[in-house]
Amino acid sequence: MWALKSSARIDVDPLRNSCPSLFLVLVLACMMLLPPGRLAGQGATSSPSPVDQAVNGSTHVDMVVYQSIPLVARWHGIHGTLRLTQDSRLLEAHRQVLWNLGDVDFLIGSGRVKAADPLWQPLQSPPLRNAELELTTADGNVLFREVLGRPLARLEGVRLYETDQPDFMVTVDHTAGMGAYNGPIATIAEVRDGAIYWLAAAKKGKGTGKRIALMKSLRTDWQLSPASGGKGQDILYVECRPAARGGDLKTSRTRFAFNGRRWVRRTQLSEGCWESEREFPPPESFP
Image 1 (cartoon, rainbow, N blue to C red):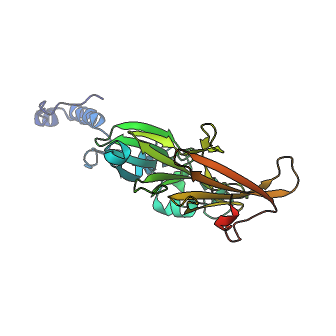
Image 2 (cartoon, rainbow, N blue to C red):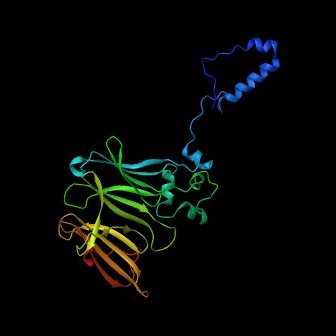
Image 3 (tube, rainbow, N blue to C red):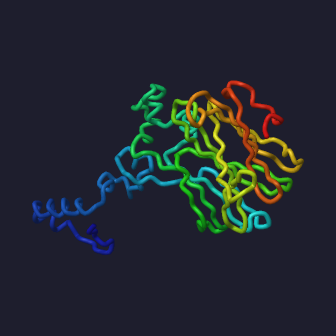
């Protein structure tokens, strides 16, 4: 944009007195050079907020830090931070309504909120960005970033071993509004030597195993329980699913346990269907 330098001073009095038409043309030209907002004496314009950008149709939305946990070198091999970022339009008021219920489209479609409500309008377009997990150095350099697959997530410390070293539970809300087989899913991150490792368990301790994913839904739940070996904590996981070849529902009980070297998974099937309206099965019922 062209602009007049502040040092370029024009004496307009002779023009005003001798040639009014030329004076008017000069004034209009100067007004065209001024940025919007300065014409009414408003001063310099400010950048639009993320909410303003969303309402006005911009496709760019910033991410902001929602949670952060400091890391300690003697435990994690790094002085830094594990942090969770989310779409900057999300407010705590939104999270309290959305968590374990569904997305914005579901809330509007089911009549729980109104599309015209000013609180919910900014979240409708563009779609909410998915949450991200970041590992950063003390000076803020990002060493690791993973997009978590859904906009809502939360981060909390957890202790699974007999030591005081904390691990980190990352819970992502996959709730789809209705259904017995969807809900928040927790995974566990360990930070060692300045890197992130996702907790995985192998069947009978063989192979590298699969990442442990712990859902809470109508027919799925989990709890931490004192380790059957007497040190640290086991993870107990119960779920009801249709039999592999169809037919009746079956309940599986799984114990994830640390054997001193790695995490192992032991599963036991039984007839019938457990649902979260009932008491969580006792630890002794898990293999």
